[in-house]
Image 1: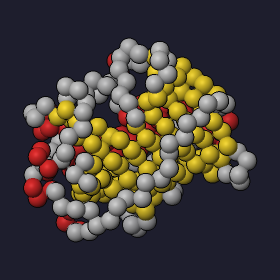
Image 2 (image 1 turned 180 degrees about the vertical axis):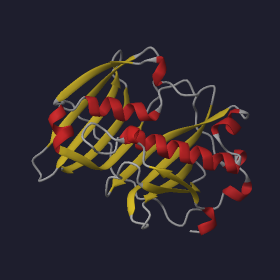
Image 3 (image 1 turned 180 degrees about the horizontal axis):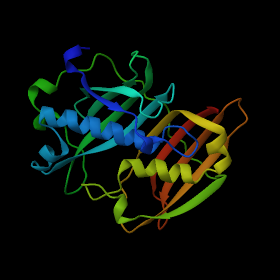
Image 4 (image 1 turned 60 degrees about the vertical axis):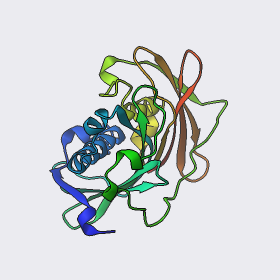
Length: 250
């Protein structure tokens, strides 16, 4: 990887990113990734605003996140991201959050696709991206399995989509899915465990004013806690997202 291709920002870890259990909030982590990627895309002239001029929009397909160590409030952090195209259909984006000692606290892979604004159908990247950005990635990404199709869940919660949940694409922002997923978990798990790995597959868009069901299956018998989440539209049970979260004792 060319070091010049890495986009970086420095920040103090904010109080608003710390959850009730004292751990980093996954939804706030996704916000950090989204803002960092958007800023980088803006410098490359391929931001969501740029693509909107071509009647296109970026949508996130997947996140694979590993949290090695929780940042501390007001800790000085360096956020890094770099990107590459994959198969002329996917925009791969790597993320890394390190402290002042360059100790990696969080790493992540994000996968985006470019779609037509009118019907959300994917398009190939090359006709719409600067040629200099269409270099091939060094190797294929490691895609972690996250295609569970669970029939019976342990817990279920219902949520009404609010206008506040929508982003500039006028669909529910990706960070909201993690909020819905975690709200379906009993509070005792959120306070007794901390997330170490989170795989999120975004399958369908959702819109105001639909109602969704957030369902979770809990596996606490393998020496570690694994929760498998699925989010559905209530009216027709169309699946919107799958999440697999691995937790460790606090």
